[in-house]
Each structure stands twice: as structure tokens, then as C-alpha cells.
Image (tube, rainbow, N blue to C red):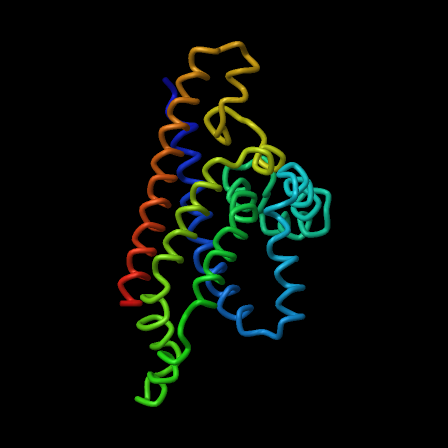
Length: 222
């Protein structure tokens, strides 16, 4: 059994998850503080990849990074070619998983009691200290849930990644699609079972995080 597709999928999902962890938290923190109208407009833009068909997202990425597109031509001057590489799938996975991290983190930040931050400022604590040592620990359950969901979404992405990365065995292979096309049903079924097991583990992790958050909330109201 060729384990490269699993390794490549996990590698792509992990890198994309790290990227959306920081960008999603950054966007959620600052968007949550904006006026309602501006927040609503940015929400539409930042959440759009979640509702668009994945192939449409992949098409837009090709319009940006294609070798005959202005941005692709610019990158080619530095010897960088994005399409049909394994790391091009990282861009696609990050784009489609970003909304999950952003929305979950923003909900956690909006539920944060700002009196805690104000109390920290009266004690002379800096805003970065309050963010990392007060806000993030309080919102950690929501942040962790968003991270797990983003990783699971990146791991299961196919439409956008196949558009920009294609399927090259040993280089960009991430799915069972090619196995099905070549009538290798036995190998395809094995990968289906592996994917089901991995997805079940992540769903279980999300449920456990939600249960812990509910118990923490009930404990805080007593």
C-alpha cells in the first residue's frame, strides 16, 4: 500500500492549519472590534470560500497563480512555479479552511468578557500580554475547536487542491480519485477506510472540546 497520499495529505493539512491558525486569529480579533457595517462586509469576503464550490476556489487560485497570469509570471522571475506542485495545494487547503478558523475564533472573542482585559490594563499589563495570557486562555476552547475543524477541512479538501495541484503520483497525490479511475477498487477502499477513521477521530475531538466548553460554562455560572 502506497502511503505517500496519506503523508502528503497530512503534510498539506498541517502546514495549511498553521497558516490559518495565525491568520484566522488575527482577522477574527480585529474584525470583531470593527463597526457592524464594516464587520458584515468583511465577514462576507472572508467567509466566501466556505460557501463557494471548491472547484470555483481552485479556479480563482489558478487565475492568480497560473504560469500565464501576471502574478504567476512575476513569481516565475524568481524561479517559483505554483501550479502542479504539492505546496500549491497548501494555498488551496488554507483558503478553504480559513473561514472555519476565522468564524470560530471570532465567536470566541466576541464572547470574551472585556472587563477582564480592562482589569489587566488597570494593572499596567500591555495589550500583547493581555491577548496571549488572558484573552487566548479564556477563549482556548473555541480556538482549539476552530483549529481542529480547519485541519479536518484542509485534510478532506479535494476540489480546490486538484484544480491547482493536479494528481501526480509521488508528488501531488492526495486522494483516492485516481485509484477509482484506474479500477483499483481494493486500494481505493483501503484509503476510504483510512480517511473515515481519521475524520471520525477529528469529529470526536471537536465533540470533546465542545463538551468541555459547556462544562466550563456551567461551572462559571455557579
